[in-house]
Image 1 (cartoon, rainbow, N blue to C red):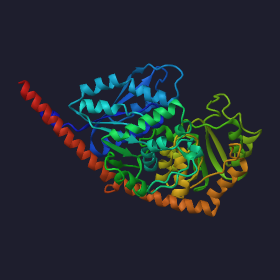
Image 2: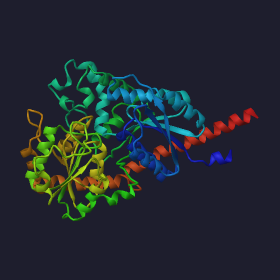
Image 3: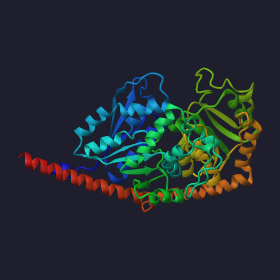
Image 4: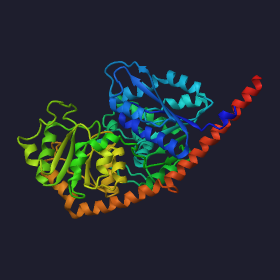
Length: 474
């Protein structure tokens, strides 16, 4: 029993399906281990059609010893579901296995942490007497918005895109309906109903971690912390970005190519692990990058959601690779993004505005061209452009395309123009503030220490209860 008393607090973490959900929670687990010496178990829901990829297995195998991971038995789902329903049902149908895992470890587990699609676990946490926390992987502005969203659902009768006035939240830029998160665009869809159902449960969490920091979003964070006394406590603990890079990263050709380029001269172009463009839009992007005359490194993930292993660049104009070979490099499928953003030759980032990518860019002081695709990325782009002034945003034509001339203009503005210099200076300031937030006495660190103390007290309480039960049994 004395040995149990000296064991560190143990946290159980259940991420949703998808690398964009798994990696942020893995990084949170690594932070709890490195800073507070906790132990963590990752309980990983799966489906019969969702085999772990080689990259995911490599990530899990590289975890430090205090973090264990378990792939739960596959959840069996009906056919024809949308993505949001697949993610949500995979967790809810894994609850019997999660309950069994937590019950076995109950005296050790001081908290259960899940993400925005794991709200069915709040009831399980209450059943087992384990405080359950939400780890919100986007901005404080987006979280404040979703707390207001049920009210919008009740009071707005038209499609949100047709709303005449924007939503104005404390400390945030006005949000027009066209910039709402993707699942809000079709109010009749299954995904809309599922997301609304999750949002209505956020208030049941014992606390909410947000991957942001006070100096980045002071108004939205104050709004979250003071607007509603019945709301769970909100802890901005970011920026938490990917660490523990693959040692093989240094072997990538793109890094050796960057070594040969002048300082801050290269635009990094990447649309995330799932982002893809149409054939026509890829063609316009290729032409626009060529016309800009700037150096660029473009990660090409295929067009229309597909990837041709034999010819990943077949959409390119005739002779394109020969024409740009002195100042452009195209990389199929993947590049070591952290290493690219931290490289001295990288001077800008054309991004889909996924929050993980934005934070990585911010920590390394790289200004961005905001090109949102889906999820909550339009809201992120809005905040970066109109709120923080650390991004430029190309204009989309009436046909839905960003044309080559517009791309060339925005690229040149970022890399050489006065506007680019201004957003670059502003991003450098945010870089300093980001590093300050996670320093030894930074705001994010102090808040996380506050929660860590709660976890320590919970561990001691569990130990006392366990000791009492043992005494009674004797």
